[in-house]
Image 1: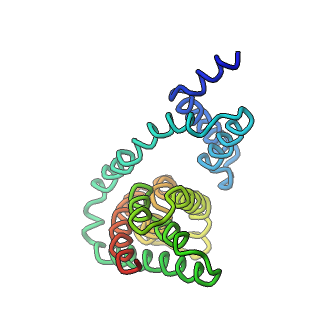
Image 2: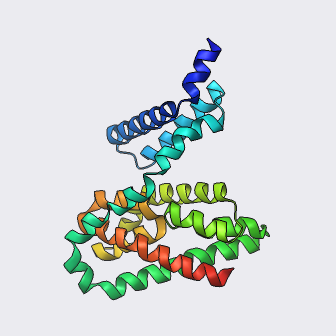
Length: 230
C-alpha cells in the first residue's frame, strides 16, 4: 500500500491536481464569503502545505509537478498584453505618469528593503533575496541569482508581497481616495506584480491594463536599479 501511495505522490500529475484543487477550493471560499483575507492563492498555499506535511510527501516529489506549473508563469504574464492593447489610447495619453509611477515605486520598494535590512542587520544574501520582492517571479529569480541571493526566499517574498497587495489594494484605494483608474492600476502593478494585477482586473479594465504595463516597467526599473545596488 505504501509503495502504491509513493508511486502516486511521485507522479507529476499528483502535484498538478493537488495545486489546482487547492486553488479551486480557495477560489470558491473567496467567492462564497467575499472576504479579501480569503485570497485564493493564500488558501491554496495553506492547503498544499498541510497535505504535504500530513502525508509526509517529499518536496522533490511535489516539485516534479510544481516545475510544470512554473513553466506557465511567463505565458500567463504575457496574456496581460490583451487588456493593455484594448487600452492603448489611454496608455499613450498617460505614458509619462505611468513610467514615472513605475520608476518611483521601484525605488521606494528597493529602498525600503535595503533600509530595513540594514536596520535589522540582516546578511547581504538576505537583502539580495528580498530586493526584487515587488516584481514578477521570473524577473525576481533572475535578479536574486545574479546578486547572490537565495532564490527560494525570493520566491516566498514575491508570493507574500503579491498576496498582501491583492488583499489590501481595494481597501487602500478607498482609504486614500484614489479616483484615477490609471493611478490605481500603476500603483497595484508596481507594488504587487501579477497577483495584484489579477485583483486590478477585477476592479476595472483600465486598472488591469495599467497594472499590466506597470509590471513590465517596474521589472525593467528593478533590473537596472539592482545593478547599482549590487
